Length: 337
Image (tube, rainbow, N blue to C red; front, side):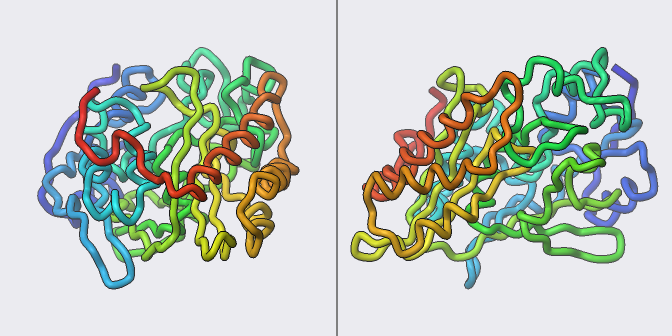
């Protein structure tokens, strides 16, 4: 691991200015992903700027929704009463992420910026366009069971790893960013970039910019997060679904659906949402919506099974929401099991 310096700051302005001026510097809060990348030799930083003392950990109710500070810990957000009551899909997504120990350390801002879990990216022995642009993507011709079926390119087929980002995508969340000269508010749909010809560029963040908060609008829909994985806990998604429905008298007024584990960014399926609008609640409708959702899928050599898995996961998630079973056994009570 390359030696690095460490500085703890108490001023947002100082933190941003330091990272903007020194391209070898990086912000650190929980550090649950960054330190692993540094140990593996995938990412380097000559100086780490500790932002844990900045006033960015509040979870505040607003007239038009809720504002979540970027260094709020994942566990604090997951068990926040308003999040559990009004945005269960967020709580469920967080509680199915990582482990209790990591959730107590990791921040929501860091979770949204975690790097892909592609084994070829995380091992410097293999060529990877995300690490060194232009040297090739080992996953395309390698073992790609965990990789994309939507939105990939000939330069990268890795999937976005965040469960939280999938839930926030279904909720039309906004990412609040502070730079050296200006602040920006960016829709989460625009914040993440598809790989195209520049897979090393994953978000719209500019050097020195800091995520300071996530804003989630008022949300009257019923919602649910379903995660399908190889083992019951501490595992990344093969497929996940954030589903939300606005239902009136057994009719779907509108729907919001986002997938995880299947694309380089949280994957919103607008066609399936439009199909469900105005339809009566029944399994045949959910099945047809699932077929609509996967019509653009382009599987890799080893992950064609994800197409069927996406369909079944979506049908189940929609059925759970329609039945009003939004809760998860872990969402009402703090537990370390």
